[in-house]
Amino acid sequence: MDLFSFPPLAALLDAAYGALAGLAAFLEPAAGASAAALAVVVVTLVVRAVLIPVGISQARAEQIRARLAPKLRALQQRYGTSPERLQRETMKLYQDENTSPFAGCLPVLLQAPVVGILYTLFLRTEIAGHPNDLLAHDLFGAPLGTSLVHMLAAGPFSLPTLTVFGVLVLVMVVVAEITRRVFRPTPVEDSPLSSPGMLRAMSALHYLTAVFAVFVPLAAALYLTVTVVWTLAQRVVLRRRFPLPA
Image 1 (cartoon, rainbow, N blue to C red):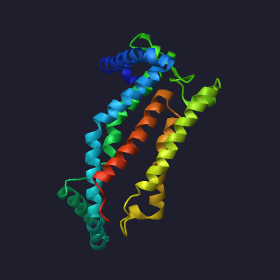
Image 2: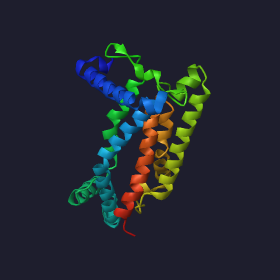
Image 3: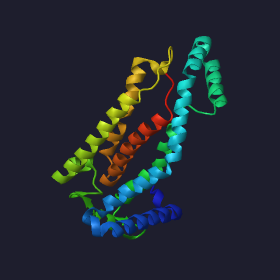
Image 4: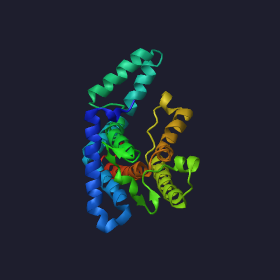
């Protein structure tokens, strides 16, 4: 089933197309064939700027969770043999502090529709019955509508596409490694989340964006790259503003 065949979603997609195409046309005198790529970068920066308040609330929540670590350890020691009671007491502690262990999921959820729309815009040859002119744009010779996996699996082989994707994935991997090293989670004694296996799994999550990027069109991969770079810079600034307790 094509979700964008429903009139409301089709109208939303067409409006997004019109806005991005208009922005690309405005930027074309300066950016040429890469105008649509630059438009994606501008849209990404606008989205991230809108989400700054969410980032601030997330940093505050992280600071509170770090302060709650001793209390969580005490709950583990007191109710470790009663999982249901431990869960109730843990959630009550978070509620009393007006925070949540899932606060970090909100930015991802808010961005999911943007990534989905970008993915769709650069996947379809037609939008609302008219040709998708965005597919005529590229970034340094790499078509914005092509994914790395599709190029390698179905061809034709394109060195510019391989190079551009390689640079973007490398940037994402470097950012993921810096994030993993600088923003290690605070371990909680006797907690399943602090086991070596769980810590390795949580570290691996930092690299999922780079893995996901090779399956989506270049336009969406560009959005993801700018997003992870912005997120790292924002977290560095906010960590200084909201330092974690020793």
